[in-house]
Image 1: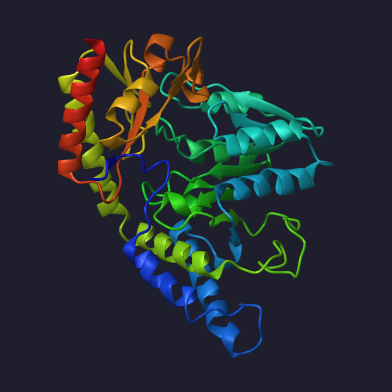
Image 2: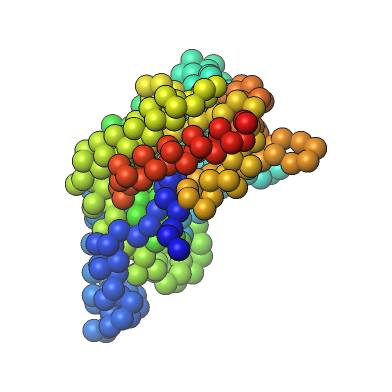
Length: 379
């Protein structure tokens, strides 16, 4: 039985072969604790610091500004709960957007239950936050702005540099969730002008369960997890050496091969988009026409139900839905709702995302399968 064509790279990515190769020694002979002072801890400790340098090079920052975490969700939690929370005496207002990942939205709701106020900014029909809306939302009590670099559902890229300039002018911390952008577009922290940036390993061909948080040197960060003082005293717990090594190599590849990989993913995405819009009537593409990730296609099929469409194409194509349709209701994603996508379109929305391993043959087969299934369902 052949495997379905994988078009869900925004959901997770396979391990890059070079990542697996780099991790192998730490799965076998290099098992030592990097905190140990004896011979067995030497190479693991060196490997952790080498990986820290690789992640830092990818983001254009200092190695000492990289904190390893268990993934993007933990990084986001630390940025808001620990760093913003540490500023409670200074102010209690946070600005974010309506289309953030739950790893931001749920943390914000938690903080609202603990004395903070949160402004959830709207987006336009392309999914972009207005810079003027950010400026208007700032109050004397604002301590942090957290806006994602690129949206996981529709791929819209936010004007982070312009928003960060507002934050700097008001002496407010700027955080961005860049889980979807690393390896697809540039995410240099000085160019973006951010104080904090979250990334997740499994979105860039590294293992699940590893991530990092960039913390600008000037930011006062308290202890996130008390323990034996690992991660520069901020996050206790024995380091996940195996996966830290994998993340380092993945970031090294993302930095060195960004232009080539971006061009390939965009070529595959554009071929997919042209094939579907050219062969199927009553379709619409969601997301900003210009400021969009090179690999992301959110596409709506008028009058269809996304879960039914995914069920039909499932044996041939792995993708994800933008809406879940039940017997008595349609649950449209919060992103499509915020973009005011009409329900008759939104309920038939699927997300197709290309990756480094996607081939032209994959795309052409996907177009044939989806076109056939849409015709069948509409017929």
